[in-house]
Image (cartoon, rainbow over all chains, first blue to last red):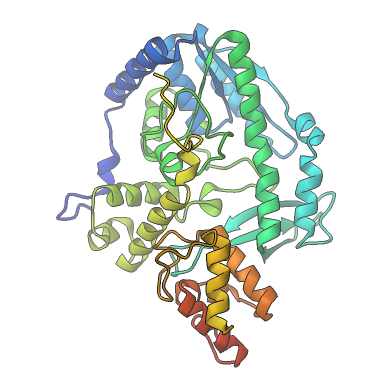
Length: 329
Length: 89
């Protein structure tokens, strides 16, 4: 469907060859003129974003200048390592596997996480799993609230709304995962005199869906300007294996499988992409709604959520702030 | 101190570092960038602790919580047992 404003699901179609060439040229330019390192480290999660980032890096720099890091931990999905290994094999790049469970154990992550969960579910323990989900803002005009979903050893699930302190404790503990992974990425980058390539897509970058100094840290972010649907288009063009392209986007952060649309975005990525595009191009809610299969009121709520997330996550993008400017160039 | 002043004080001290600036009783916390979703959790925790007010899922809406005026009316309504926006009772 195309509206009178020209807005349709087709607005996100791109020419994969041309976009790949453009990104690769820019990666080479950035590496040569600004980063000045010999190659890049890419953390491979088995997901679409890291796979495409690695593939682009290989095209831009050559497979001899790219290393993939696979960093599973106790809660990672079982298929994660197999998928990331498959991408690396398809790209012909060397990889290192760093199981971060030991580091997480050393910093007390598992204990801290379980203790935080027990603040609301006292019986939580061995054999249980959990995740955080959010309320759907597209369905009703509510503030985002956070729920803990737990699953006991008999696979029985229950959901409880999270009060402030347990919510903060769970998120703070979980952020160890992204920060420890980034620490290892920079370890390997330093030992190889490489840079770190970050893997956020535009939805994540724009909406602040990253951990500051965790997955938010990088030297270059080659796909941060691409909507997630466009990342999938490049994935097909770049020959990313089908099982990665057909995998549902996951955070791979909690012990229970968690979709990105459960935790952060109010809609599945295809719809979020279109809403974000529409918001960025001043498409009215009335014009966007029929394309999205939503009511105008729902689109307005998603627009509001986009604006709120931009505003409230702005600080994640900021460098350390100084009292006064210090000249250094 | 009346209810509205107490809530206003809490918002100013907690989210504005003591500087009320242009905060009015009708200022939208969200639109003015005063409170984010974590801030709403803080506000709800305060209401529960200070006024023993339980906030149901369907009451977590701007009509109840998005300004000093609205929060005060919400708490007042809960204290009086009146039904609030979003509540089924």
